[in-house]
Structures are given as structure tokens and as C-alpha cells.
Image 1 (cartoon, rainbow, N blue to C red):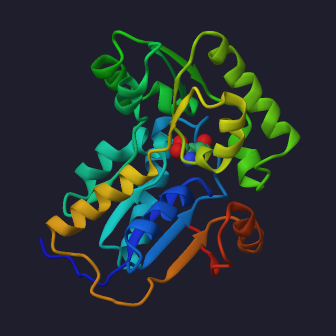
Image 2: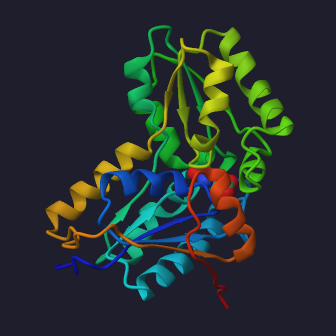
Length: 268
Ligand code: DGL
């Protein structure tokens, strides 16, 4: 298969979470054009059924392909758990890079043998997570939290709000009391609250944001397909949302981004 080098990389998530992956892609592959789709009309995905998330992922894949995406990054742990395997079967000619909770690096960093995972209910229910536990965590104590309500706070750009603090405090306090020393951010929204998580956890806990590893994997796939952009200029970024474009545009600076153009798009 030959990919068009200067076509954009397509990236999607239920909302702003996948922008943590976009940020890592911008750093690693600054000359690539990026198209991002946030499904904010249907966020959060984490409490939905796997079938529903699969249907949404298919629609978004079609949309990104219609915009000429040369590779698709499923920048959402929930959509990866629900749909990645299936998307690869449904679109055999497309290269997908997805997310999975980084249990392997966590086990490598943990001395105490107590590892925490923050992810959505759907991610915890998926077969992918069960197989990660089997493969990498059989000798560990793995503590889990779904941080109910946290995705919604991050969607609002409330990275340091009172409710955000309360949710994280409640999720992490018990883990810390039980000896946690490695924490996996198993939802792409959570790297945006990394400073707060680090403040609560202190220096003794190693926190794993998988975004840089995903960006490396995207680079690896593009290099193998001889599909790296030939542009010298900084890549362009275009953001689409199924929700409210103005509201997303005003949230971007709170997440550390400049004002990218945001366009609304809806599916029939
Ligand atoms: N950012 C998503 C993830 O990585 C999902 C958040 C949600 O929509 O529940 O799982």
C-alpha cells in the first residue's frame, strides 16, 4: 500500500482528551498536518456500551478518511478498547494506531508492587484490559479508579477546579495509603490534570502518560510506509467537533493550545 506523504494524520477522541496525543504528535512530528475530531456531542464515551462506541468510531473513521487521513490515531482508550480490533477488520487498508493502559511500563517502574490505573468503566470492561492484566500484572496489586465526573470537568477546561481536586483526591488517597508507586493514566483526558495528580501523589509515584509512546509508534508506522511528510514548514492543525465549535475554541487556551480553527461537523 502506498500512502500519500503530505496527507494529514487523522486523530479522534470523544472530546478534548486526544489533544494530549495531538500535543505529543506535534512535538515528535512537527511537519505533519493534523486533523483532530472531538465527538463532544456524545462525550463521555466511558459509560456507553462497547457497541455504541464502535458505531461512533466507524463514523468518525469514515469522516477522517473523507478528509484524506493517511493514518488514523484512535486517541481514546475507550474507543481503542471497544473498537480498535474491529476497525482494523472493517478497514483493512487503513493503518490505525490505538491506545492501551500502559501496564507494562508501570510494572517496570514499580518497586512496591502496587500500581494504579485511572480509566473509564468501558476501558476496564474491555477484553484488551483483561489481557494486559494477564500478561503484565499477575504478580502485582492493581488498584483501579474510574474517577467519575473527571472527563466532564476536563471538557470544561476546569483543570484545577474544586470538583476536579475532590475527584482526584478521592481516587488517589486510598491508592497512596496502600503503597502506590506507579500510576497509569489510562484515559487520554487525564494528562491535562497531570500537575494536580503529581501534586497529590508527590515525588514517590511514577506517573505514566502514554502519549509520547503513541507518537513514537505513529512515527514508526509512517517511516515504515515511507509516508513521512516532505514539508519543511510547521504542519497545520485543523480541529473538528460534533459539539459547539466556539466553546471548544475557547477551551483550547486553557489546555495550553493556541487558537486553532475549530469547525463543527455532524453525522446524519
Ligand atoms: N478520552 C477517553 C479515553 O481515553 C474517554 C473519555 C470518555 O469519553 O469517557 O478513554
